[in-house]
Length: 252
Image (cartoon, helix red, strand yellow):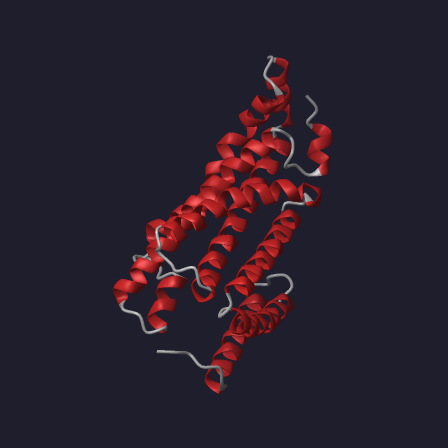
């Protein structure tokens, strides 16, 4: 089974977009036009992605180059979301710490072959979810540090070091950032049928093949996000991965 671009898809997308805008208006939600912009960007970006991927997946070197470009976009996106653009080297380190071991495992175990057609979708999914895990961990940590500065200062006054004092505030927030990923794993096949599962089925694979691919992706996402969050916490504790306002206020 395949879904080919054409009038049926265009009609379905138009109806769904109209439904979204109507619900925005009925619910008195702000900026209903943002849905049009989002949909337009999705069409353009996915169209360009389809053209680029079709051009490079048969060449391993070009596929790796594409994945590097996608990772750069992921880093730029996460540092913008956490409002810490100057901390991009440390965000990069945290995300690579989560992503590279997972990619190494799936390649060394020969779970997926070292080809562009296999690497681009799998590594792309892992990179995107690593970005999300990093963003959630940092946003929760930074919010806690701003809201609980008194607790940080109290820890310092008791003789704790700056990393220890930051950890007193931040550590309990890190598991919160991992909840969406854990829930995705827990509910797979019961509440949701995730993208990799559907993709394999639509590509003509068997349900067993789809299940195997999805388990691989989900466990890989969980490992990558967990590692990224823990490394990010350590970098935050060393006052490396911080926005400017927190760097200035969290003096030792």
